Image 1 (cartoon, rainbow, N blue to C red):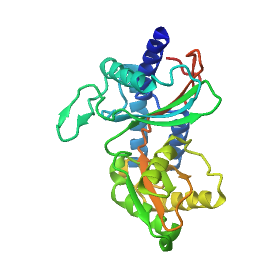
Image 2 (tube, rainbow, N blue to C red):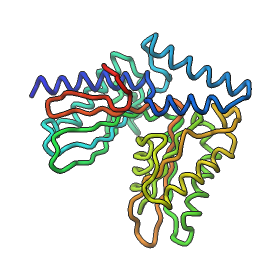
Image 3 (cartoon, rainbow, N blue to C red):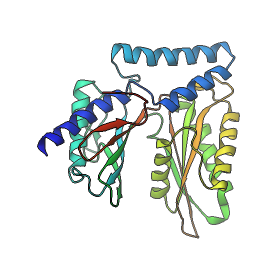
Length: 297
């Protein structure tokens, strides 16, 4: 088991580094699609720079963005996965290893004491969110670099029921007109609907783990996705805020049940360099990278 623990640390350290350099397939494909729609000289230049940036990140073996963010893990773990009890400690060690080897920018500052740990770990960092799956012995781990300009400055609020989903849409659009410009568009917009600020906020982060072309299975929620995407595009942020036809990679909503007297709503966004990846481990620690077809570490 000791050898398996070190194997998971090594693989996850390499995966964190990989995510910092190579965008997932769905994001790359969407950027290429949006690039073709923009005809302006400035907008075309911005997209050319984005793709050149990604090319150089791989060639030079460097992070594609200077802000490597706070590392966040979203885990769907089988109850019988052999390392279930050790996962938080092992992932923390993986972040330390990636920080030293990649390297990653030091982004973990202890609150109130105001010192940078220099390791990207600290009290509560990296952020780890769990779901335990009955009867399974494998694990899926989403790895995400949450940047200081995009998904960390999210917004959340609890609305009174009379405000309805129209009120939720108004709240989201207000957020997009204020901090959307600073989040390096085009953006993946993650919307959470729940029963409180914390459930809505977590749902909005889960929405950022979904494919940019994901469709909410609830017809009304999907209608809201479509309308929000149209509305945010009409704001006209464009690539890197220089104006243009499209401002978003997509809009994803994750919704859970709510108390009848409250509607929790939250919005988080991923920047154009949406650095997330999904890796799967079986019980023997064999891994498959699901977000980047054919990728090997």
